Length: 322
Image (tube, rainbow, N blue to C red; front, side, top):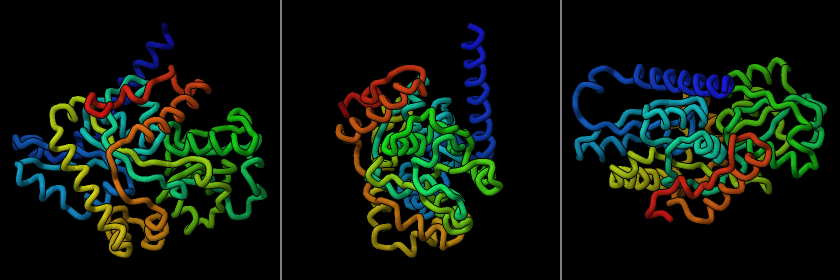
């Protein structure tokens, strides 16, 4: 009982922190002006970042009297915590965060996904490392963001190499801290996604042991809180429509994509160009096939007791999606 109480306290505290950070990022006039606001959570890269840079969603929703507020999160798990506590309405994450969030009781729904992008995440080692393959990770320290897309990549890459998850020492760190640990040699390898992956390759000379090819799909998912999606289906549809439009534009304008993302993220253009070249464009409504893939992710985490209970991913769909 004491352990459960401590866990509940940690979740409440994290929720309060997330809510406070998000609320603090919104100007007082935006909160007080009385217009409806669509609150979007994004990470340091991806189509939502591109959409923010293009400004097309704001223009389209302005005609309906709706404002858009953007909040950047360092990784998917904390973004979904923001969604769970009601600080944002809509956001994007990789494969694993929705599994952890759903298992923790978050009432979220899948509303769309990008095509597979297996080369946009990888397990990397320092350029002078003696490690040459995933099998060499046995007994080594691997940094990763717990509950992120690379958590599943690491599981499956180890499995493919004949290792169990317990054969490595997982060191759970957010991207910035993981990079610092990687640079100073405190960890032997780092499982990470773009653009942090591209930055490690370009700036540190990091060498890829394995990316997602032949191992994982690495879908990027768009999610909304269930209550927001149920009350505002037209707005959610407009967001997906605008994402599809910017995806289609991005396929044909890679240089412009890199320029916008560099401006939005503050990263070097060469880093963003490498990451953008690996990105998969083409948002679609979530299909039953993709949900079946997500169920495999959930089952893998449940088998290792990385989530507190097994889940049915289809429970995170709206009735009309079933």
